[in-house]
Length: 190
Image (cartoon, rainbow, N blue to C red; front, side):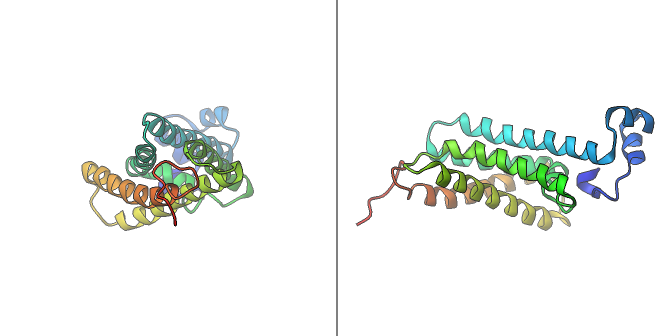
């Protein structure tokens, strides 16, 4: 509900009704609406990060890892658009607490990506590239969601489009990664 309707437009009463519980029961588990929101941001962020990490780790070849990570990311966005919007949509940065939570998610995903980068670069460079890759995926996802607003939601078509986005961004990112010092597939520069 937060992802699709936004933080302010979603009440605890609405959430309780949708969950099939009373409002007092909801407040027994979450002292406030913001506590519930922050818990969801953490949980959804952990799910997205785990999906990317698991998919990338399942591959041994560097390009296959890049593609698998993007595929997991975009499939998550395609299948769980409201969850992605909870993380990176219009309500995600409405308070310092929300902004900090989203920043932790970005940090976690970037920290997951960095170790997969095979190159002779220092940790600060690896971290920067992790954030850059997360930024590419996040902005592309927001644009993709915006384009899909008026389109049909055929799940197979959405996953096919997710795979196309993954391939396109993997190609772009791989072109840069393989140019790094000591990277596999690096072409010699004269």
